[in-house]
Image (cartoon, rainbow, N blue to C red; front, side, top):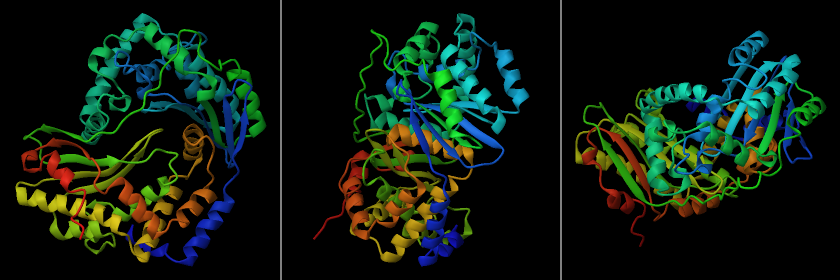
Length: 463
């Protein structure tokens, strides 16, 4: 990674990125009469990714129905009015296709990776799954056990649990505090009627994007979308309205003491920025400037990022990963840490490094550090754009969050235009003397200062 950063500095790197941006295929966009959007990028090749991105997820549920969006995702593959589950599975297998779905806090996605000649079949299949799925009581009851087993698997992934707990304390009492899977009691009681009501309320055409990338023809995909999704309603039926509530950030903490664990895992977060904030790429640049630390990486001691070099010097953490999570109206910006420490002094040293280096961004950065951070951010963006699936993902997500597709040239130009003053201004807005949320699981958490101590670490005494 260090070699990659060094190689991408200077004017030559800007020319390289510019040439890549110019080579990007244009995004073609069509809005159907029912206001569903269809976006394609014809990047060529013998395969394609086609999917439907829907502007709904766990934050659009209620306390009583939390988990229904994820439950629906599972049920979508259990048969439709046209296909049994076995017929569905055989048809996908016979195409050699990959069919999948996922649910997040704000989006639900169904997508297929297919050979280009099977794009029409994929669109028809996706429409059948989304619009004609049947939810028999027996199938719903069987799926409860599957989801409960999935919950056990998720709970064994410490990072997932920490971030769920972080959301709980960062957004207490507001929609983003809820988990994606929902509580056990809801999983055990969600009914077919709950699932059907959720679809009628949230699966409306203006909240849906059909995105396709790879070996695709725009006009063909538009025609297919009109044929198979043209009857999706523009608005929910009477009686199926939903009031979207804001998720408000607050400073709070939660700690799950598990002395049998070999280490502590925790996330320290400020309120970040929403997707459409003009400063979002500057905050992403702050994430790159902090750097990623892994004690197993022998090159960490020679890292350019001050936080990484300090962590390597004092050896007070196993791993530190900055994060910048965005939502429609808010965000989270902070650090995820794994550490195996046993004294107050060790934890004091660790938090002083973490918080001092975040605060240092509010004092400004050097031109060299700014160039390094920009190069790394660009590289990470380019790495995530490799293939038809990431391309379709970006189209779907951006049309839901930004309301448009931001091409690569614009993205890189926005990063190039960030100045040291921008970094200082945005870091000051997000970090300096701001509330923090903290979630931790593991051993020796008693050595970590309380929420007031963490809050005091968000500013210095200025003279």
